[in-house]
Each structure stands twice: as C-alpha cells, then as structure tokens.
Figure 1 (cartoon, helix red, strand yellow):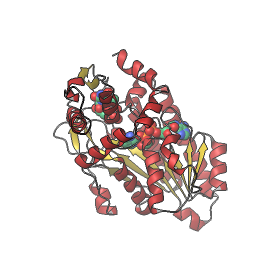
Figure 2 (cartoon, helix red, strand yellow):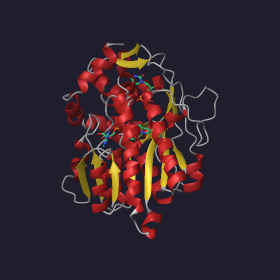
Figure 3 (cartoon, protein in one colour):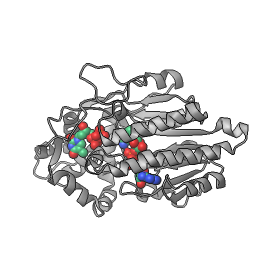
Length: 353
Ligand code: NAD
Ligand code: TYD
C-alpha cells in the first residue's frame, strides 16, 4: 500500500489514475480538497477498492499516523501543496502552512512510523517528495539548464516555500537517515489541469470568447512536460531512485509563453474553428506583468536518464494536441469548475492588474 498526498489535484490525480495501469498495489489518497482538489478527476475509480480516498490535511499528525499504521504503508508520494505562483503573491500564508509546516508535520509523523518498522521494512520504505524547478530561481538566456547541483535561489513565495520543504526533506535524510528522495520538475500540462495556470486558462478563455491574458512581453520561457511523463518519472524514481538523491525531471521543451499561446490558438482554429472564421489569436491581450516574474526555467534531465533510464515519451507537439483535445471533450469538467469559487480568483488576479 502506498500513501499519495494531494492526489485529487492536477498531477496527483493523473498519478493515481496511471498507477493502476501498471500496478495492483492499493493507494490511500490523502487530500484536504482545497479549491484545487477535485474528486471528479477520480470519478472513474469510485467503485474501485484499490483506491481509498481520505479527506484530510497532511499536517494532521494523528490522522496521518493512524493511516500509516492501519494500512502498513510502504511508501509516501507527497504531492500535496499550494501550487500557484500568482496565488502566492496575493496570499502567501497558505503556502507556508501547507508547503512548509504541512511537509514538516508529514515528515515527523512518517519518521516516527518508519522508526517503528522492522529493519527489512525500514530499508524498503521511501518518502518521495515532489518539488519544482522554480526553487533554482531564474536563468539568463544563455545559461545552462538547471542541474541538481544548481544553487537554490527561489524568487516567489511559492518557490521559497517549496525550497524550504526541500531543505527539510534533505535534512531528514542527513540527520535521521530517513529514506527520502526528491524530484524537481518543470512545468506540467495535460488533462485535469486547473484553469488558473497558463495552458488550461488559454484554452478555457479562448473557447469562452474572453481575452487571453499574456503577462508582460510574453517572452518568458518555461520547459513543458506532459503530465503523464512526469507520472512515469515518479514511478521510476520510487522504484529505482537512490535515497538522499534529487532528480530533475523535464521534457526538453523550452518555449516562450507567446509561442505556447499561439500554438493553442492554431490547434483550436483547426479543431474548433469560430463561426465567424476569425482566429482565436485575435483574443490575445498583453496585460501587466507578474511581480518578480522569473524569466526562464529549463531542466537538464540527464541525471534521471543516465542513472535510472527515464526519458519522456511525448513531444510538445503531440502532448499539446492531446491536451487541447481533452479540454474540448470534457466541457462538463470545465463548467463544474467555473461554477465554484473560480470566478472570484479570476476577478482578484486579472481585474486588479
Ligand atoms: P494542485 O494545486 O493541482 O494540487 C494540489 C493538491 O494538494 C490539491 O488536490 C489540494 O487539495 C491538495 N492539498 C493542498 N493542501 C493540502 C494539505 N494541507 N493537505 C492535504 N492536501 C492538500 O497542484 P499540482 O499542480 O498537482 O502539483 C502537485 C505537486 O507538484 C506540488 O507539490 C507542486 O509544487 C509540484 N509541481 C507542480 C508543477 C506543475 O507544473 N503543476 C511543476 C513542478 C512541481
Ligand atoms: P503558470 O502556469 O502560472 O506557471 P508558473 O508560473 O509556475 O511557471 O505560468 C506559466 C507562465 O505563463 C508564466 O511565465 C506566467 C505566464 N502566464 C501568463 O502570461 N498569463 C497568465 O494568465 C498566466 C496564468 C500565466
């Protein structure tokens, strides 16, 4: 049995769904269902007893200790986090509470449980911490992509809180011998991506005939990874990763934001043309930049390839086609999100700009 935290969010739910394609091992999914947690993502597992969903907080030591003991958990994959940079700018506190204090509590509870195991179980136990490339800060145009040896230079409250959690995880290995492994991943995209992030927001706004907001000059660079490739990397690290190590995960797909936006518009023009024949590109609107906006992220994923044999399967071109198709086929999922508190976030982030 493995414990997945944050498994109702974007990457966590993709991970849970994909897990059962290659494993019969059960998952306990602990998620406190913030605005980003959505049980609809897991609807296909509602009658599947391999998946046990528990609504709760990673910071709840009593609950987590009970779950670990009751289900004799052999590994934890920690996705639970506040994950959106813009939200961290407008309200950083929740990021400290979950990403720093929550991770700390989860580490403490898991360490106590691990200490109670026999030597054989102890040696097999893993705590896999899912983190981000944003902890490394921002690259110049000609800098080499981030390797695992890069200095931590986080620039947003989000990346600073993730950096703090990474440091805690690292320290538990060095101080207590607790068997951790950390992955630092680039920007993901794919099904079930909450439409506050760039790619799903562009698709949703385009289809609604709304402005497609591009921050600043739109020339910031991100390195895009199809979410199912990220999930396969995590399975690979869980199985073969060395404890105490960190692995960078990326798709070798550096793109400027404006290229991403235009590519999505081109795909929509082809798959779902507007009645008046005008391109979706006419909705692109440059808006005020994000404060402290990191210019470029890029991942050197050679270590995970060399040491563990992992490579991504999707190119950006194939992954973005699949993603747009998924959003076109899942309009009910989008409508249900928009009927919640989503509108308030859009007003807070874009109307005050
Ligand atoms: P997400 O915001 O879509 O989902 C986060 C999930 O965690 C939600 O289901 C939420 O309800 C849950 N959660 C939040 N606080 C919790 C708490 N205190 N206790 C229990 N559950 C809680 O995030 P995501 O995009 O799926 O990201 C997952 C992880 O991957 C995060 O740790 C994030 O930092 C990391 N990451 C994300 C990306 C990306 O591009 N999305 C890239 C690199 C790393
Ligand atoms: P985002 O998806 O929020 O991921 P991150 O900030 O963690 O990389 O944003 C990706 C890029 O797109 C980032 O450079 C900010 C930019 N962006 C826009 O230009 N417009 C938007 O409305 C959003 C949400 C993001």
